[in-house]
Image (tube, rainbow, N blue to C red; front, side, top):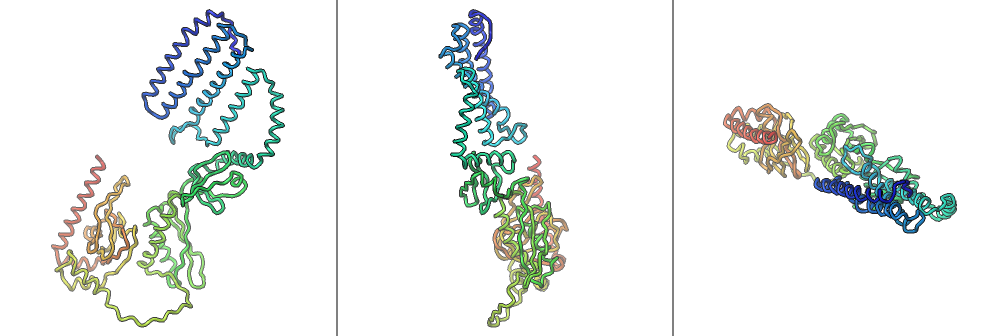
Amino acid sequence: MNLGFDQNWFAWGLGLIVIFPVLVILIGETIHHLEKSYTPLAMEWAAVFRFLQRFVMPQLVLLLIMTKILELPADNFLVKVVETLLWIFIIHFSMTLVNLVLFSDSGKSSWQIKAPKLLLDFARAVVVLIGGAIVLSYVWGFELGKMLAALGVGSIVLGLALQDTLSSLLSGFALIASRQFREGDWLEIGDHIGKVIHINWRSVTLLNRDEDIIILPNSDLANGKFVNFSNPYPRHVESIFFDFSFDDAPYKVKEILIDAALKTEGILSDPLPQVFLISYDEFTIRHQIRFHIEHYTNLPQIRDRFVSSIWYAAERGGITFPTRSHEVTLMKPAPEAEPEYKRFLALFLDSSLFRGRDKKILTDMAKQAASLHYGAHEFIIQQGDDSDCFFMLINGSAKEVYTDVAGNEHAIANLEPGEFFGLVSLVKNEADRTSIIATSDAEVIQIDETQAHRLFENDPRLSTFIEQKIENGNHELDAIEAKLLD
């Protein structure tokens, strides 16, 4: 390093005595101020200034003393050693500073460059090689031309020996440059599906749903094909096929499938699910439903919830999964079953709400009622619905939940067999303010509004009791909203 100053040794000594301590104090105060903020970024900057204070500046002062005060010649061995160390410290300081300014992780809204680790490693290697070449040429007098010629011959031999490794390395840079995927993306590569957890010089590492590690060479990805489920945006479209009977009208099937999808947690309502009639097969009509989910990560859980709910939705909607027509099952005639309404009537007479009420009206109500089945996590009533019936839980369990304006879910009550719900839209002619969600396989009785109104008109005290119960529930929901506003 040729500093090129013409000052005499006294001026240099005086300058070092005055300027160096002042710079040390200023840098020390800067470090102290940064460390007091306790933020990760400030700590990184403090480390950069500490390295400047402890390594670069002392080495620079030592070199100035040797060359400007002691006036040692530039070709002196000790001067070359000190100058080499100074260059090494400057190169390290420069790389750290550039990395901090351009590539540090300062949050999603940062202007800084989000570079992969592989690219940063390559950039550091290039800077080190260039810096090393400068030191060898400028400080030690090596001729770069001869060095490059020797490296060229050696690189040919090394390239032939490391052909596969270099292929993966170059493929890795090609993948990084094309920005086709990054860490956190879900990829399908051949028979493997997993989340990218690491990209290095040689390979890409996936973590599959079984929590197994899959390591694939970069050359396999560059030369083959893969599917990125997370790019260009994380939303994912899933398709599922269902076969239903020729007895089921296509538009009725489509309505039931779309309704089940919209009531499944995790399936987006915008865009709306779509159902297509695919084909008329020998024994079935094949339908395809396509729906969107927020992120591919949650696909297995959402798909399971939806497919499980279809059995219950099909039973409630009166559509059937067909069997092969040539299968014949011979069975003994079953004894004539007791009419379903008698079971409903017995449950009504035993319930706390209807006990002691007009039996004739309850009988008519039971004859008009229907039994519906719901699977765990299915909505029996969805908040905002305006239904024309109410329900009695007779098997299984359910919960009542309220979703506030901020989207937070509040547990209101756990429902057990014998309890009624859905009375708000029936009595007050208003939309339901809460949702009822099955927490296990559940069976409910759906009671028609016409028969229910007959019962309320016949027994005003029952109507008053229900209205009071609804009013108490509304007060509880209002309190939740008021707390949210506070």
